Length: 464
Image (cartoon, rainbow, N blue to C red; front, side, top):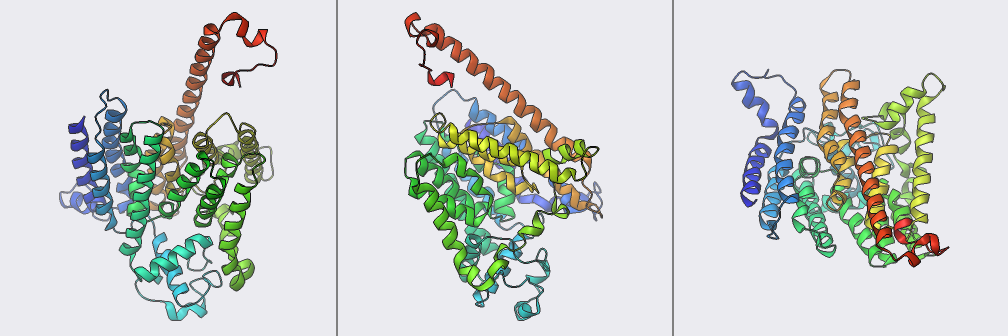
């Protein structure tokens, strides 16, 4: 197995080293047009890297010996990240907004007060960062926790994209450490950390593009670990910090909440409130930033289930988009309530995984590839071929940016989401069948006098 990991690691390192430089190399030998958009190469790169990743992953999952290959796994994981640290910003320009927001705060200005194009910020413009900012006409969308980190990172590495991504890399490594501790605690093979550490999606979106999920994930894992240990205050505080960095970790609240425990919700609410107070003081209602615009139809990107539901509702509803959002939001709410009611029958990690997965299936207005990253740590505990498939197939969404009108072909939606739904359905059916067999075997093994039907009111945990 060690040779498989080493071979796939070396091959992957070569591909990561080439990354988007593969287009000029192929054009020199006449295989592609020199004017080909680098984004057009991304699905090809992902397919190649995912194949190598899958080979390494299968060798881990199928190994029979207890020998660990953790040194090889971690060594290559670090190497991949260092290589991509210097990758040009081809996939996303978000990091330029991070630097800009840090620069604005270093000048003593509230980042929510004015968009980058505002005359009040003209004196901060330059030729390297400002022209590359995404949506310069819009106020920032990033929550206060992210803004605090932007300000801190700007003090450490002013106007440095590589410096900012280096800090992201450090947080990403912290996530890997937390996953390994979790695997050790749950007596699962620590080599499974490869599922996250070698994921092409994680590597390109965090080490390569520097997305905020790198800063958020350690706090999500800390919240889950704290709740498992019964430390409600720490769990609420960590989830509050994660929510202040990226808003959507708040959907884990139902997974971590326990009835009659007020410490968790109070701490969570207090941390979020304290994070917003300094920025509300100088910006008022503007502190919500671009969020209202972000949920409007023009911002819809790579939407899956809601798109298909809207399509089905179009002949019957005046506003199929709004109706489909309402239906799916209701489904998510009911699912969250069910998790709260099943407080004692599932551990926080499984409830967190189910809640995060349900959110990604049902609610996102946009489904950018980096939004999927936060599911990968859960997959180290609960492997899912459906979500693993999507972690590769979601690279197809970048092809939208290679056409002039940014059209999102239906074929891409089908290729991304239909196999996901099928694989998740098959996995659910398999788990249900397995649980039924376990239940029947348990009942057969019980003495006749202890069977539930002969002792009214006694319902074994497996029956719930």
